[in-house]
Image (cartoon, rainbow, N blue to C red; front, side, top):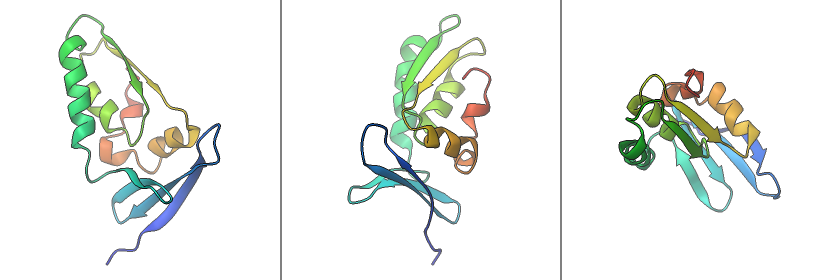
Amino acid sequence: MIPRNRIGTALIPGTNVEMQLYQSGELFSIKIPGRGDLMNSRMHGSEKALAELACEKIGHGPAPRLLIGGLGMGFTLAAALRTVGPDAEIVVAELVPEVVEWNRTVIGAPAGHPLADPRT
């Protein structure tokens, strides 16, 4: 059995609620104690579907602009980037700075490092 290790924590701004980042082998999860997984790198189909649905409506026009509420593990952003063209601009509004840092470092690989894309 692969051990699960807590590798990061972050307070949600304006609250005393702590988010915790865990790693188990190549799998990552973000949890809130007592509430279970918020998201993980193993199951992210709903994030992909959400981005594809939104991009069907606006993603194929010239230079579309999208706003994504919350970065999470980057899967919604990654799916949107795959769907829109090279002139698109995508802004992600993330409240927790540590989530952005985690995506730039330890958890970016499963989603393909979408923050490295110049359209973001």
